[in-house]
Length: 71
Ligand code: SF4
Image 1 (cartoon, protein in one colour):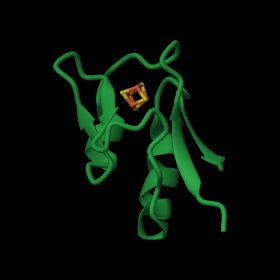
Image 2: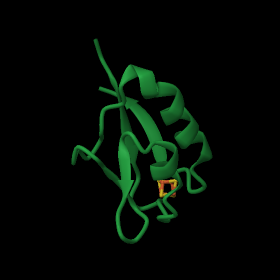
Image 3: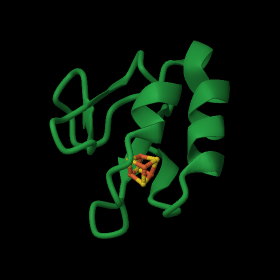
Image 4: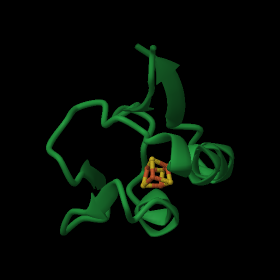
């Protein structure tokens, strides 16, 4: 079965770290406030249990820099 992954558009992200707060299970903030995947993936997988939180982070990103993609 395909799974959702979180795509971060680095050219749009303005590094306020909101997504790392909303999705702390998947993301951490780097020292400048930009989100990094805890597992080091470029597009970290979003477990089923976190789909809702991920959707919320996507909807709240002020720079529209987050997107859920299917792989
Ligand atoms: S919420 Fe959006 S703009 Fe803010 S750090 Fe995350 S991806 Fe970047």
